[in-house]
Structure formats: C-alpha cells, structure tokens
Length: 274
Image (cartoon, rainbow, N blue to C red; front, side, top):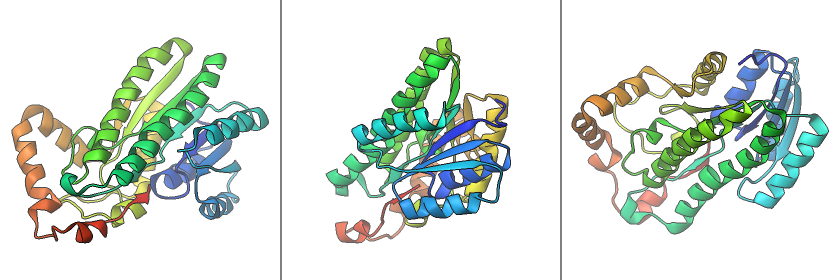
C-alpha cells in the first residue's frame, strides 16, 4: 500500500499504540488523519504535536461502545472530509484477573469495546469503502490472539475473535478490492500494560517499534503482521511443540508467583485503554 497523501482513521488514537501509529503515519506522508478516542484532551494534545507536520488532523471524541453516536459521527466525517483509505482499529481495553475472580462488568467492557466497538467502526467504514472499490483495514489483535494467556482470559478471547473476524472479512471484502490485515503486537510498554502484572521473561516493545513494523507491513500488504522476535518464537513454538509453550506460559504467568489471591488485591490490577 502506498500511504503517501492518503486519509487514515485511527481508533484508540489518544495513547499507546494508536498514538504511535498516528505519529508514524504522519512522518511517512499521510495526508489526513482522523483520530478517534474517548479522551478529548488527549486527542487535542496529539493534534498539537502533529501540527508541525504536513498532515491535516481531525479529532473525533467518541465512545465506541455507543453505536448510534459512532455511526452518525463517521458518516458526517466521511461527508465532510472525504473518503477514508485506511482504517486502523486500535481501541481496546484489558482487565487482568484470575477467571474465578473475574467480574461481569469488566468482561462486558472488554467485549463491548474490543469486539463490538471494532465491529461498529469497521461496518460503517467498510460499507463506504466498498462503494469506492478500494480501501485497507487493519485490525489490531495481539500475540494473545494466537496464544491465550492465564489471567487474561476475556482479553485473549476478544483478540482470538478479532483474528477470526479479520480472516472472514479478508475473503468477503476482496471482491471490493479492500485489503484486511491483522497487527499482532507482543507486550508493549503502554499505559495499559503498566497496570498489569507482567509475565516473566517477556521484554516489552515500545509503541514506536510497533508502529514502525505496521508501516513496513502496509507497504508489503502483509495479511498478518507479527511484531517482535518474541512473537515469532512463541507462535513457532506453539505450532511445533504446544506442550512446551503451555509449560512456559504456566511458569511465566503471574499466578505462578506469590501474588495476593484475594479478590480485593487482584482488583487493584487495573484496566486502561491502549
């Protein structure tokens, strides 16, 4: 994909990987950025940082769990600012807790944002891309979309689902000349991961590194973009020797350490938007 001068919409753009992707796209010649997130102030700060670059910036403060609001806003944005060539679905939330201590409101939040929010945005944009017979969609999954992680059951489930959704759309939308890709970062140093109990032996990447790998993947039209050597090693190990990967996960899991087992203690392990 040639990204020079295109219009890109990024969800979850106010922080973490989404923010880094916005900056990297701007550095690589994107013409217009539509930045979507709930935090209006953070979006304004990012827009100010982008003001020195040769890119038009539009911010949309939206809660992706509100489909009516999202559909109206995206329709208006398409009419006002023109067609969107690239959609990057990056908005997400994670709660970390042992499954038996999990709380339904947290599970519902992960499902509502990670899955239904992504679905709502994708449907609104893909239908319009199809009328133009062109476009690219990137769904940000995770290494946890390939290898489920203890204490992250619902988050892992949403990331597995995103990969399945991406594969289905890749086949369905090909007739409309729409490319559908998946980005799978490993552990990344963001606000979200700083509030999690980390797994042993995993070295976090920076959001900038993830964004740079995405740019390379876009230029190659890669259907699935694994980020970092740890991701490649883990997927290879899962494929060749799944029992080894299971043992490593068990030893690396926060549950294998002497962490507090009370619901109150685990409640302090928070959630944050990517």
